[in-house]
Length: 377
Image (tube, rainbow, N blue to C red; front, side):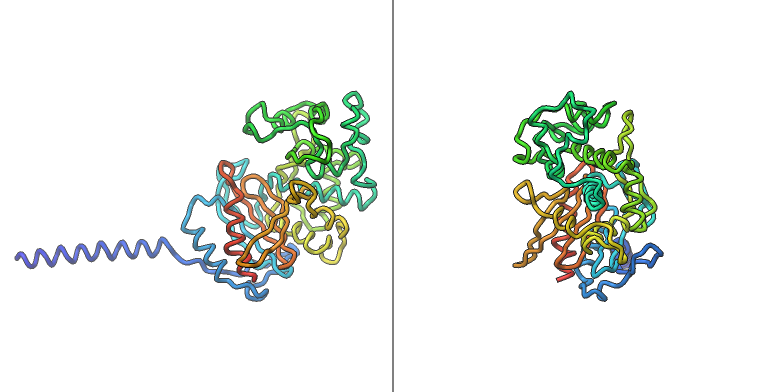
């Protein structure tokens, strides 16, 4: 009798252990790579192996992400040799929503990635001779604010606005964005944001000191508007988005001023973000059509400030893969929004995310360095 009881206990224990193994196995299913779906959006899709990328690191990256529910990444796309070879989406919190199911047709808030679009629009304005040069003085476009002019402000050029070296007093990082002491918060809420910024004193000689200044990027947007006679929505549609085949985009309009917010919160689909990155990788052309001059592509992605780490509203970064250094430049935004261009590998990488309460950069850069770039080497 005792032996029978022991046998029953052993069998129950075996079944419990076996059930746990089955449950664990089903919870950690392995990622299966699939070629991105071909759509009528201008992208040709292909496999990773077709462009000589090793799928193994990419699969490892996805297996690592699928085991976590707090990585905050919403999408990852890879363009290699002009083809979309990787595309995955995750659900999560966007800046203006508590939860979203993300996918190829869903627009995403770009946060400060928008700044690089504004830089490109300024380059297009230069190409079309609405603006003559980046050496033009900022105040020449704001005669209606001449009461705020002084000799130091008169030295500020478009180049200084593009490189975050205007020298104007500004602080958008010491306090949270919701804090009324935050300059960007006050700028956004102002009835006259342009006046709010132009009345600031110059505290550093223009061109000598990097100070991240979202307000200054909105000055550039207003300069494009005043130079071309077109609002940013119309200018961007005619000269950038329509030529790229982008139809679903949304700029934020500040209230109560009605100013188009060109320093942040443009909404685009990730595939369209990739088009913008590829436009720069491809020397300013899309499908054989010239949209931006190669001259502007080259000039805007050079390092001018922050010890060479910042161009014309683009960031420059070097990745270390073993003994090899890989140069890149990227548009970056709060929460983990990135368009990364790696010219020597003929590659564009796009990330969107919802890391708004944490550092959204590290999950992106570490995965690019640990998985994505090694897959292409």
